Length: 341
Ligand code: PEP
Ligand code: MN
Image (cartoon, rainbow, N blue to C red; front, side, top):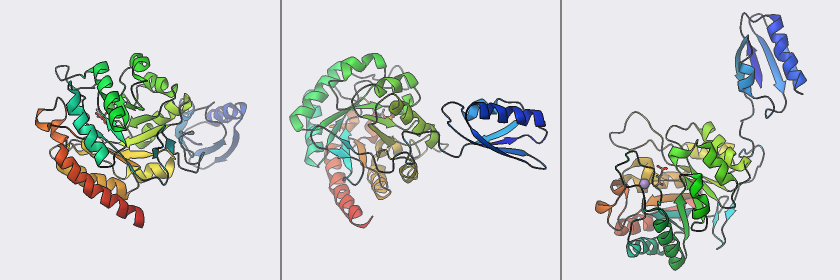
């Protein structure tokens, strides 16, 4: 870390910082400039965090040199993390991008879900997604069929040979949910629900961690760090768009650059979700393609057997025929991208 002292900081204030750092095992070099004293400290930031030093009188700024996420960092682990599922499906590294698709919410009709799952399998997908617990802005909106939905999902997964992904909203549901799913999803609204991150850190099941509506990339990787720090290395990141000022044409701003940025700084796999990323059916295909071009390890798409009557997110859900068309082109595109990138 580099600690820059205030212009008016006294020698005693600088010395106090230096002594504190040294007594905590840091190697310290400093430079008393005409305007500012600059202290260069090398040591274990798990004992002394930048925030702690910022509290010392006379400190103007603390700059970090190494990113605060450690387990998620590429510095720590050079090679990409590859997550392998029981059926041999792999995410990350040089493996072909995976497809996770399904309805926003699992509804109360197994055959409708099976229709979607069959289409996902037919186009080469590996994961059936579907919400059983729904984080909704309004309490009057559909909140999810909970365990009944998980039962439908598991059955459809078994019938089609797809792995199952569903969102966990509350740690107290984890024991019930764990055997129904192959991947636990932590939604955008819970990216900084640290108790929930800790809970999924303690289980032996891969986790999809969605980017928060207002997460910086650093905050996002620190959220992943919470899961890893608690013992679960199998985190899949998911760019699903962030809030910005123009929602007239898109629901969110899908931050395509976050994918190569995250690939540079982290070894974790990252997928894209152009359904929530844009909120528009017609943008799913181009933004999924954009994600693949910049190195996404997979795509998540919302598909519904009858979008006009969906209980949630019908506007951004592809119908089954549209989904099949989009996926035919996307699969072709993905093969091309893999030949040239
Ligand atoms: C979802 O995938 O259904 C969902 C609610 O996503 P997000 O948390 O990204 O809004
Ligand atoms: Mn949705």
